[in-house]
Length: 469
Ligand code: HEM
Ligand code: 2DC
Image 1 (cartoon, rainbow, N blue to C red):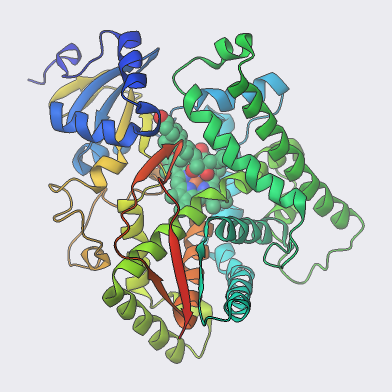
Image 2: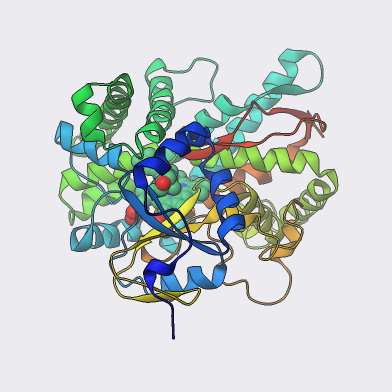
């Protein structure tokens, strides 16, 4: 018979003491390392209490399968407290990111049709390719300017701009011009606000924000300022589209973007559309850009794999006569390379769900309403799950046989990442276009680690070189 809940291994009796220890260990930026260590110490399941938050943590794909197969139709993840606190403080509506229950589900189903469904997603290809082409053109111009036949830089900010330009093109059907030499300071402010928002979230994760609010701590003020900037900039973009639509300035022939489709469908209240579109605009900056940066870094460190990918892309291009939609159907290794990048460098350190019924994990009874976290970072580097985990090997995803609950970078099920298809297409097209035009290089001696800043990011700048083929 399964063992009772209170026999689970782990430090779950003294929440505040644990939080204190966590701070002392520099846990703030090392959540992922601490988790990996706890799995080593306690085995594949442990219970933990940090401050007021209690969770059960798992690492094996089989346990993830058990968890997600029992999640039901209204899955709920850990609701990041400072994000909720901001919305309540400013009286701003929740979008799908923060909604729960039926209210979440009805919004989500409407959004799925315009953001995730295969027919609509194919229409994103020309919009996203155009942005990728501009990036290539800009890179070529930078090579010219350098006078040294290559462009070497920390690409963080270039990729932030690329990512925001991309997500806005599909959301609003309009270009912001972020890949030009002159960048609109308001757009730049939006990008900086998203980074600041993530950065100020992590220290407040385990301290109730209400407490910080009363202390009026600098962290909370910065967080509010960051969200204010995000909402006001998104609102401007949304108002522009709304006005153009009313004045019939938009030609109704071509695809006009996700926001237009949602407004014309008229099935969601405008405030709910706005809330979720704002979340998508903010969610589309650091996520894809950091993943692309890691992908280029890994390809630079594995020139052999980079050559294989280039060969695949060039063959696909010949066969499809340059048709990007067709090309996307044949680039299996490139898609595997993106999965492999997210295995080693997931954006989200964990996936979380509240259980709705009793589940058995590692032969322990987990009661309903328990927060269970899948240690995504730890799983990606566990040799039991991925042999030779330190090796970047896209090929491992192409080997015969199913790989259930191993590729979880975007989450799972009805509550998985809403931007998943946009993100995948954007990254596939970007890497295709880069591989067609440049060799990616880096100084091989430099080791780069990972830092938790709410999302996982490189712990030092990554310098990459693009060299025209
Ligand atoms: C949720 C990862 C890009 C918008 C999530 C979740 C993960 C994730 C792990 C939680 C899923 C779950 O609980 O099962 C990623 C990764 C990205 C990425 C790895 C890129 C490499 C994007 C983009 C957008 C976006 C480009 C916007 C277009 C969202 C939203 C949610 C979400 C709105 C909440 C969905 C809901 O609760 O219904 N993402 N994401 N993400 N993501 Fe992404
Ligand atoms: C952070 O302990 C660590 O995709 C916490 O695009 C648990 C947790 C809960 C929700 C996760 C979050 C972590 C990391 C960032 C995620 C978020 C859900 C969505 C969000 C993974 C793992 C993200 C980056 C969205 C953000 C959209 C936002 C900017 C409007």
